[in-house]
Image (cartoon, rainbow, N blue to C red):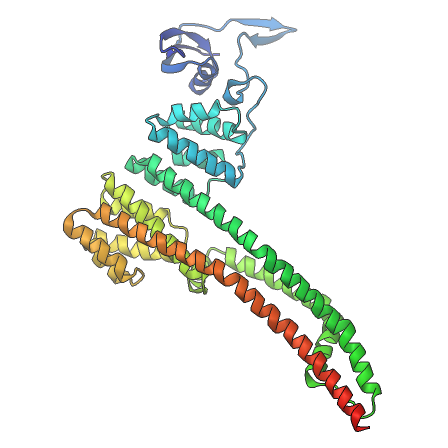
Length: 430
C-alpha cells in the first residue's frame, strides 16, 4: 500500500507533519479528516514501503484505514449511495449552509461544521458526502446531485449559478426562502382543505342516501298512488344510480387506464413542452407558475449580474435554473438575440412572453447602468403579485366548495319536495 507524506493543521492551528498508509490520495485525505487534521499538502512517498505481515499464509497490511464514519464517529457509518432527505431537511441544510457562508466561512469548513452537528440526522451523512466530493475538486452543484436525489434539477442549477457568480450564500438563502414558502403554501392548503373535505364527504354521503334509499322509497310510494307521476329530475337520478350500480367496475377501470395513459403521455420527453404550455394556461394555477418564474428569473439575474457575470452567461445560467420547458424556450430566444447584439430589453420584447412592466424596468436599468438594481426591484414587485395570487386561490377554495355543496344538496331537496307535493296533489284530486 502506498505511503503518503503530509503537512496538515490540527484543531489549534499548529502545523503537523507525518506519514500515513492509504490506498490513494483521496483515502489519505479521509484518514487525515478522521484524525481532525486539515491537510495543507499531501504527496506520495515512493521511497517508503508499508510493512506487511502474514497471518495464516495471507498477507495483511498494518494500519489499514477504517471505513468512513459520519463526522468521524465510530458508531455512525455513512450509508452507501445517495441519501434521501425530507423537504424540511433540505430547507434546514440550505439555511444552515447559507448562514455559515454569509458569516465568512469557506464551503468545506462550513460543510465540516454541519457534519459535526449531532441533531442534524441524515444531513450529517449528506454533508460528509458533499464535502468529500468537493474536496476532490468537483463543483458544489455536481456534488449535490451525487449526494442526494432530494436536491432537484432546479436546486442544483441555482447552486451552479451561485458558484459562477460568487454569490452562493445569497442564492442559497433565496432558495431556502422559496422552499419555506412552498412548504408553508402546502401546509396552508392542507389546512384550508380540511373543512371543505368534510363538507364534500358529508355531501356525497347525503347524496348516496338520497339516491339509494329515500328517492326509491318515495318513487315506490308515488307509483303505488293512483295518478302519481315520478318527477323528471328524480327519474334521471334513479336512472343514473342504476347505471352506476351496473357499470361502476368498467368506469373505474376506464378512469385508471386514462390516468395511466395521461401520466405516460406527460412523462414522455416529446410531450413535456406541450404539457408545460398547458400548465401556463390553467385558471388560477397558470398565473402562479408565471409569477413564480418571473420572481426566480429576476432574482437570479440580479444576483449574477450584480456579482460581475456577463449578461449572456447570466442568462444561460438563469435558463438552466428554469424548470418549465415552455418558458425555457422563451429564454433560449432571448439568449440568441442578446448573443446577436440586441439589447436585453428588446430581446425580451421580441419573445412576446414577458409583460410590459418587467420590460420597462429592465429598460430603465439599461439606461441608468444599474440593471441589477432594476432587476431586484422587479423581482420584489412580482413577489408581491405572487403572494396576491396565492391569497386569491386560498380565498376562493371555501366559497367554491360551499357553492357546489349547496347546489348538490339543494337539488336533492328540491327533487324530494317536488315529488312529495306531486304525491299530495294526486291524493287530493282523488
